[in-house]
Image (cartoon, rainbow, N blue to C red):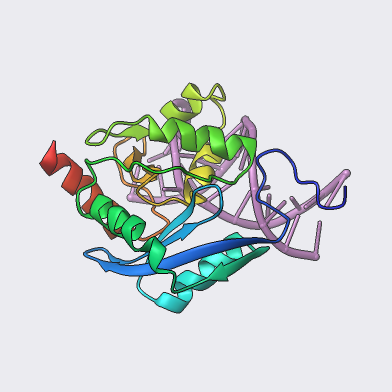
Amino acid sequence: MTFKAAAGAPEREPNVMRFAVSDSSLGLVLVAQSAKGISAVLLGDDRDTLRDDLQHRYPFATLTDGDTTLDALCADVVNLVESPLRGLNATLDMRGSEFQREVWRALRSVPAGSTTTYTEVARRIGSPKSVRAVARACAANPLAVVVPCHRVLRRDGQLSGYRWGIERKRELLAREAAAS
DNA sequence: CCTCAGTAGTGCC
DNA sequence: GGCACTACTGAGG
């Protein structure tokens, strides 16, 4: 089987992915959906950069733009960005290594309005020494806000980094703190 | 304040 | 099969 992919690894076979970009108070939000569910939520300031980012994450995907059936989902995701306390009721298509998906799954159990640390996540997934690898997995999170990697802080409480800009992380946390 | 080593997953060669 | 990356952390100066 030439195209056999490792379990959980990003899809190697050609596949179609629909996406839409809309505006929000945190900048542009790109939402992508595969046949299995939401495959990406990316934040940024430039439409083309967002598209490039999506294509880079899914090199074998054929991207389709301008599909109005994504409008409702896109609106839901923007609402989530505006009010992070509300959850998102949608099926997710999280593609990544086994380790990455374990990290992302752990992140999804961090309640809105609270935070955790890289060390704590590492401990929870049973790899207490993989602290740095956890940080890398957070950085690779393809589902911004939906998988709340912004709730992970350093052990000393510092914000550390954020793939989509530290200011966005600070703002998301401020909104959650204010609403909870 | 600073540097340094330990540490483990990932991407690129 | 290497090798150089990190959104880390605790210890030591």
